[in-house]
Amino acid sequence: MTAQVSPIPQGFHTVTPHLIVSDSRKAAEFYKKAFGAEILGLAEGPGGKIIHAAARIGNSMLFFNDEMPEWNVLAPSTTKTKSPVTIHLYVEDADKMFSQAQAAGALVTMPLADQFWGDRYGTLQDPFGHHWSIATHIKDLNHEEMKKAMDEAMAAMAHK
Image (cartoon, rainbow, N blue to C red):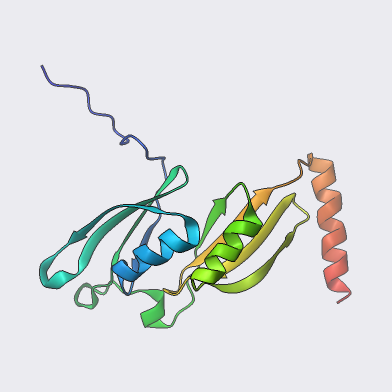
């Protein structure tokens, strides 16, 4: 008798980011230090390149692999283009995680601050050119409260 196979593997959610990095071994160390990632595996291919890596950050999975120029698979740090994607992390303590990521080598692109939508939120760029946002939800807002807070924030920005 054959066991039923789950279409979504245990421990995964519907969406799993998959990043291209210039050096997966260095990325694995950075993600461990910066975000507390648990590295689940690094699959080495011909020539020593990492063709697939898996990590768990909190309750979510992250895949990454070395760039492969021969297949036009390049990291943002190589192409010198700004990645249009931000990977968002909700964490228990945004201040702690933000500081931890900075200490590991992430660059601050938006300082951590309390935001009008109810999160303590900031953004970073990792050493491989990928963007990360870190947040802790600090305030629940209904639709009307959110609209009022947004209008006030936008008006304040317009006066700067």
